[in-house]
Amino acid sequence: MTILHSPGRPACDDAGVNQTHSETRRTKIVATVGPASWDPPVLEQMIIAGVDVFRLNFSHGDGPTHVRVIKDIREISERLDLEVGILGDLPGPKLRVGDYPQGVVDIVHGSTVTITPDDVPGTETLIPVDWPELSGSLKVEDTVYLADGSIRLRVIGNDGRVVQCEVEVGGPLSSHKGMNLPGVEAGLDSVSEDDLRWVEFAVANQIDYLAVSFVRKADDLDPVLDKLSELKSDIPIIAKIEKPQAADAVEDIVEKATGGIMVARGDLGIEVPLSKVPVLQKSLIRAAGQAGKTVITATQMLASMVSAKRPTRAEVTDVATAIYDGTDAIMLSEETAVGDYPVEAVKVMDQIARGTETDLPYWDWVLNRVRQDEMDVSDSVTQSAVIAAYRLNLQAIVVPTASGRTAKVVAAHRPQVPVLAVTHSVRTQRQLKLIFGVRPVVNDQTTEIRNLLYECADDAVTYGAAASGDLIAIVAGLSDMQLGTNLFEVHRVP
Image 1 (cartoon, rainbow, N blue to C red):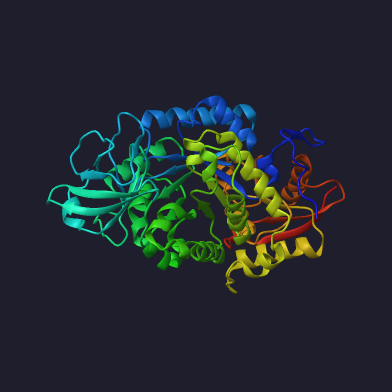
Image 2: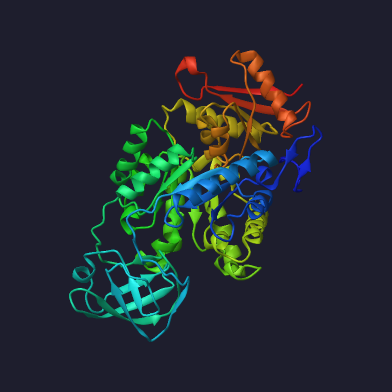
């Protein structure tokens, strides 16, 4: 079966429509914006290299900085005619170190450091953490992890106010890095007032997705959902799975998370034994697939590229494994936020995805990836269309969609042919940039059914998904029937 035109940046099809890596690659790339990447020339290079969605980490940076970055992303995307989505990541109930005015300090192996609840500048030996329950929660021999587990401390003393630790594994530490305490209940609210202020910020600035951090159970999503409802916003929320409790409750969380889940392996790998992370990753991706929900695999995927131009072979295998498992998207964190080679990291992700996608178990996914509900019209219609793509050698599946829902349901079955989602909404286009195998484009569609079918065929040619004489599938939901996705037609392109 054919795919969209071969890679080139930018390439042009016969109709003169620009096509890019991100439009011909099925697996989507999420890249975190930070000091290494938030200047407009770097953002532009990253979009050209293949970024589909930018992640804004609200744990770092202030409101005006994020507003500027959002403005730059939107302006660059419009100028390049390459829309990208924006994902806002809420800080969540995580303990974080305070400010290090000097930038980065080195926490030295074998040294003794003090953790204090006082609001003081951090140093090599003094680690401020805004947590009044600090001394009452930590006891001698407890383990404390900092900076995604790269620094390990052992508690050796507690005077009732501050805690002394021996540095068992040292490393660099900077402002607002996270603190993990496996087995210790910090007693923090699932969603803070600060998180809710960032929700308001996301709505005001038309962010496309919101990630909710440190979810432990499905009900932890309610404060964010309630706030969005109060603001009359339907921004999809993504539940970050980084706690063992969340892994145990993943089916309920997947059901409630309107945008899907993120397998956040950094904190997950600290909270559970490292040997369990690969198994958990597979089971979490499988759970999202069974529910037909979006899943992002994140954290330390190309960690060596923070300071190196090339990844390790193990990292390349790790990224490919997530794609083989069925993830929608792969995410770069420090690699693009503070790394030396943000653009190169995106290019490597693109290359790994392309090399892996030729060998994915598409046919098995069509039959088995999504849990089947015999009474669900949308699921039955979309699965039938994907099966027909194989049996009839269809060249593309074209989906006219207002909200993006039909395109997501089609993509959940993982067709090997392109899914061209045609929408009148730029917002829907941006949100669909996160969905595996979907190429979203903006084009007004008629509401008259026969004209709609011919317009979809024209769009398939215009955007390079099919040529005259090819067979395509057209899948849609007719709103007046109130059945969800209920239309599937095999159409020969004139």
